[in-house]
Length: 131
Image (cartoon, rainbow, N blue to C red; front, side, top):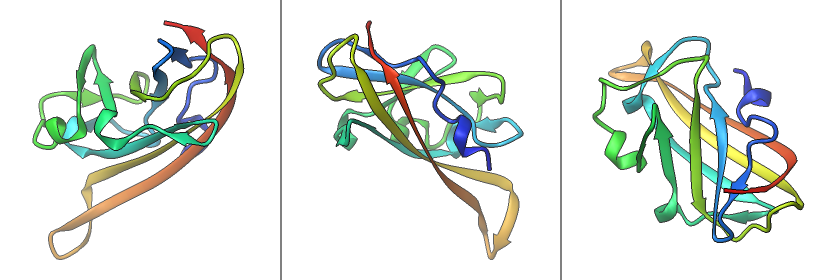
């Protein structure tokens, strides 16, 4: 719905082996953590291995599996989350960052016990800073 604003410009951080970027919700209403189905992170065409991906929401870092049943924590449209993964990235250079994000919209029913899910993609070029 709002794919060009998923990645916040200028937020790429690196430890040298792990990269992180701030992301915004591609929807106009808040969603519980359980509705964040998954994401991918790539830098310069190199994807972070799925098992290394972490999602930080409201100061709490978890895997997507750990958020599956969480209806207490919410992602609001004005708040950023942090997506991170193990990707070697050099600080101070320009990098192409790509994020794919899948979220479920629990109040839009599209079939028998099936809710709408949206898959969005965003890419931006930005400098990495040392974390």
